[in-house]
Image (cartoon, rainbow, N blue to C red; front, side, top):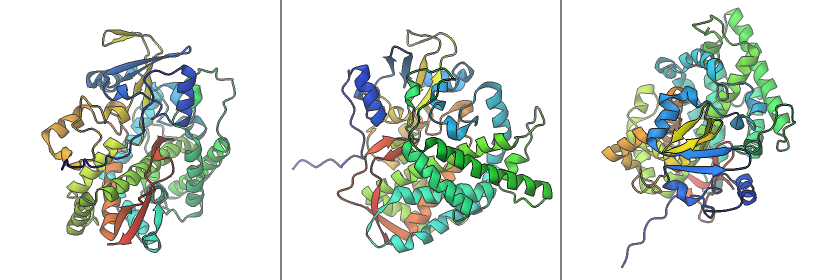
Length: 456
C-alpha cells in the first residue's frame, strides 16, 4: 500500500499566472497572499508593471543582501507602505528614513540590548503565567479561538514590559480592544500603495480606522505624560518606557518629546504585540496538528522549566518550533523598499522610484532554497542545510541595519509563552475549522484559529 503523505500546513491557493490589472487589484483587496502567482515561490526576481509604477519582487539572496545589508541607504522604506499605517504610527521608527530614522534608532536600541532583555524577563513571565491562569476556565475541550488568546497574552507582555501595568489596567484594556478593531479592518497595504496620490488629497480608510487610531494615540499620550511626571518626581519604575524616555541621542543630547514617544509606543505595540500574537497563534495550531512535536515541547518545558532567563536558552526544541513557525507564517509577509536611483538587477533595468518588494512569505517557502519548503519540520534547524538557509533566506524580522530592534525580545517571549502554555494544556485541532492564512497587518487566519484545550 502506498503510504499517505502527511497533510501540509495550510497555505493560500495561488492565483493564475496572468490576470488583468483590474482582476489583480480585486484579488489584492481580498488578500495579498493569494493574489500572487505560484511562480513566485521559485523565481529569483519578478517584475510587475502598472500604469503608475513598476514593482520588483526579489528572492535572490545576493540581491537581498544588497538591498538590506550592503546598500540599505539606496533602498529606503517606501512611502507607499505608510499610507495605511500613518493614522496610528505617525512618524515612528517603522516608517521613517535617513537621519530621522538613525536618530530614533540611537535612542531606542539601548533599551533592547541583551542586559535590558534580562531585566524585562520577569514581566514577560508574569504575563505568561497570567495567561495560563485565564485559560483554566476555557480548557474544557470546547472549541476556542486561539488568536484572541494569544493577542491578549502578547498585549499583556507589552504593557507589563513597557509601562509596568497589566492588561487588566483600564487604559491597557481599552488600547487592546481598539487595536483589535484597527487590526481587523486594516489591510497590509492600502490601495494608495498602487496609485500614488498627492499629500493634499484625502485618504480613504476602512470605517473606524481614524477614530480608533486617534483614541489609541490619546490613551498612549496619557500614559506617556504620566510617566514623564513620574520620571521628574523620581518615582518611575525601571521599565522600557523609562529607559527610552531617559535616553538622549548620543549625537545631539536630545531625547524624544511626548509626541515622538507616542509614535514609538504605537509601533512597539504594533510590532511587539501584533506580530507575536500572530506567530503564537500559528505555533499553537501547528503543535495541535503535529502532536508528536507538541509532546516534545511539553516534555522539554517540564524538564527545564521556564521560570528564569537562563532556562529559556535550554528550551531548544521549543525554540526550533517557534523558528519553523516564523518560517511558514512570517508575521510581516512582505516589506517594500524604493530604489533611490536607477539600478540593474539580474541584468534587468530597475528605474529610479521602483518599488522593491521583499517577501519573507515567498522566500521562506522558496523551492530552490528550502528542502520540502511547505512542510512543518522543526528538526531542519539542527541540520547544516537548515542552518545555511537560515543565514541566506530567513528574515522574519528583516535584516541588516533595519532589522527589528525587538527581534531578541520576540524570540524569548515566544519560547517562554509556548513553554508555559504547553506545560499546562494539551491543544487539539477542530476538525471542521482549518485556518486560512490572510494578510491584514500581519498573517492571520481569515476565520480565526480554533483549537480545543484540555489540562495536561
